Image (tube, rainbow, N blue to C red; front, side, top):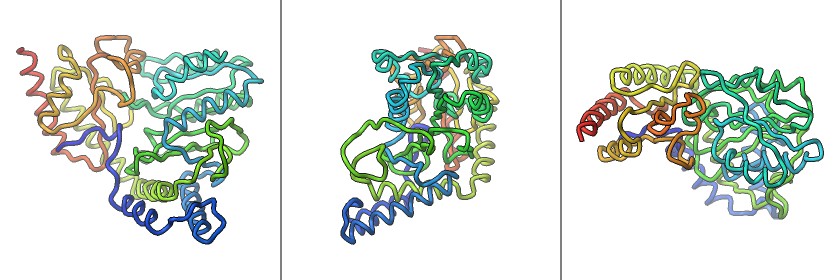
Length: 372
């Protein structure tokens, strides 16, 4: 099997799974209980939280555990909107966001909020002049993903943050799901940041929202004591401990991992240019994601053809709806190109041999499917 869909989800690291199993077995108490079993579970959560905080350079009190990035994105948006609606009801975001953000738009509009989409330049980067132009006194939230999940475009978060500092009443949220564990990101200038463990070899079903201390939220879930007042429910001890383990392992030898993936990415792009495809990824994309479009073949047709050879890639982000990539359409303004796009996502676990076999097989199917 050749797995090239790491941006959709990563295989769980065995040692992370071992941590989950051990904690599930050994820490049976409810962390909210006052007996010693509960207290030991609570202490483990605190230790895990401190480790995560240390790795991300945030405070332990600023970490809210969620079921993943989709819940974190919903908590960020709805939490801010309903908490600060007395200030204004306007939000700014982009068409490059994950569906867990974009699909909140109709709901928020029904509740009286206005969502503006900032323009992108020819590279898919946020148009800074247009962003500032859209910041009116009633804007309460700006949300821009650090890295787009389909094209891999990496936004200048530092420049966006510097601009928003001029508007202290505006809260800055970023979905950091596609960069955390792959590269470094400075969270000092971000008010809210969403992430998911499954993107850095952790378990599915656990993630978090970093919420700076000066920000308040209206909770999505009410119902009792937990690790934070912003997300009720019995704390998932094993998931939290495994998340901390996965993040620590992701940061181990990270510069070498980044260099290796960059080399693989360069090789893959060079090989793809020899085929009858259009390369969509540019110099502003992270090396982990390589997006290209077919010319005369449906993306889904190619996906299933590759699957017959046990090669797994994707046509767009796994959660997206529709027959084409809205992100790619917004960048390149070409619906045919957006409807035939494919995403290869690699990691430090990928090999050059896998990519060679993928390109060889892709070339075979491009030729054979075009003959039909």
